Structure formats: structure tokens, C-alpha cells
Amino acid sequence: MFNKFIASILPYFPKSFVWLFSKRYIAGKTVEDAIRVSKELNSQGIMVTIDILGEFIKNLDEAETNRKEYIELIERVEKEKINGNYSVKPTMFGLLLDKEVCYNHIREIVAKAASYNNFIRIDMEDSPCTDMEIEIYRRLKLEFPKNVGLVLQAYMKRTLTDIQSLMDIHSPEAPLNFRLCKGIYVEPAKIAYKAYEEVNQHFIEDIDFCLKSGIYPGIATHDKPVVEGAYKLIEKYNVPRERYEFQMLYGVTPELRKSILDNGHRMRVYVPFGEQWFGYSTRRLKENPKMAWLIIKALFVRG
Image (tube, rainbow, N blue to C red; front, top):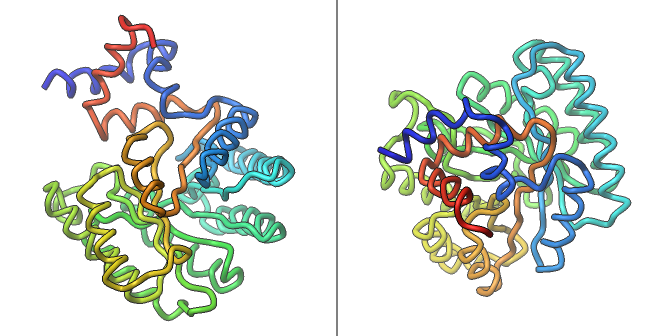
């Protein structure tokens, strides 16, 4: 109860206070910070996906600014020879304001990444966005079959059906590519599983379908039971190491991350950065109120 209370009031605290928590989970506020952290992770044998923070914009001028920032990011990161790709949130490009403007912005970003033989991941946002974001993925996958992927959330009751419905654009040469995660948005029980064991069960079912169908999954979890369930499925279907990867958030469960690497599996870390760090941080806190204790500790314990 204490952790939930702290998590609920922290968004109203000064940003400088919340930064004590945030700096553990965000590369920084600039592209230089993202490149520095990405190189550190690369040196440990870890791939990255880089994300400029921001979402749910209010006007299309912001969408244009964000498009330019991503184009510049790709040019800079490719110049630095980072082993990584990029993640984008459609509401950052005006999904809820003008779907076609949003699509065109993301298409340009995908084309830019494709010109370097690289890859863009379309993040999944809350349920009002789900159908639109799947549609964007479908359209882009047909034009850029090897350069775009999608995030799907295991706690949504529709997810396995969504995966199956996209099999018509899947091929062994250009497989569907999904980041499978639990999901962070607060959704009604009518459309989302709530119980821990139930979410994990469906997460494993989604991984199972992907692995046996030749879909490339990014298994995005910090939950040991899900990791162990994935290990069993990888062994069951004898999946080559280059046909899947594990993914984690920057700064979260480094010991589990290391154990996955030590077991010979590929790992990619989500590296968020940017001036819009505050909203991302408070969402992470609402998702996992236990993190509140880390903030309290940071006030009194050096390091």
C-alpha cells in the first residue's frame, strides 16, 4: 500500500525529484546520451533499440518535429555504427489526430532505416490505438517486408487472434517480427487479463505460436517464469539462435539479463531518451509501484 501511495503522488512532485528514479531507466535527455549508453551495451554483447520519448501529441506541428528528430537520430546512430534498431510510438506522429499524416511520417522513418538495411519497431499503445497500429504495420510490412516490426501485448485478450490474423503477410524469407511484452496500460478486465499467472500463461501461448510458426519474436520480459517457459519452447522446437531474441528495458533486472546472455541467447535492450522523460518515468512507476522504494532509498543512500 505504501509503494502504491508513493507511486500515485510522485507525478505531482518536482521533476528534479522524480529524476532520482528516472536516471536509472532512461539513457538521458540527448542523442549523445543514447549513443553513449548504446555503445556501453554493445560492448557487453547486447543489441539495442533506441526510442525518442514522447507520445499523445496535441498538434501536427509536433508530429513534424518528431519526424525530423527521428530522421536525424537514424543518420547519427548509423554513423556511429551502433548495433541496434529503432522504436516509434504512432501517437507521437499524430495517430489520434490524422491517421494518414501519421502513416506517412512513420513510412518516411521506415524508408530511412531501410536505406541502411535497418529496422523500425512500431510500439503498441493503449486499446483505442490497437487496430490503427496493426493497420500501419500491415501496410508498411507489404512495402518494407524486412524492415518493420510491431509490439503486441500478452495481457490483451485479442493478441493471439491478432497474431494469427497477420499470418497472410508472413513468409519464411520475411517473417512477421513481433516484440511480445506483457503490456503497461491500464485496460478494463473485459479486454485484458489481470491476474499475474493468467497473463504469464497467455504470454507463453503467444511465444509458442510464434516459435512454431516461424515468426521472429522479441521476447520482452523481466519475469523469470516467462524466460524459463521460453527456454523450454526454444528447446522443444529446436529454434536457431538467430530466429528469436530476448528484450529488456534499460536499467531493469540486470542479473536476469546477464543470465540470459550467459546461456547463449541474444539480448536487446530498449534505450529511451529525450526531453519527454517525465511521462515515461511516471508510467513505469504506475506499472511497478515497488520501484517507489528505490526512489526513497536514493534520497538517503549514496549510490
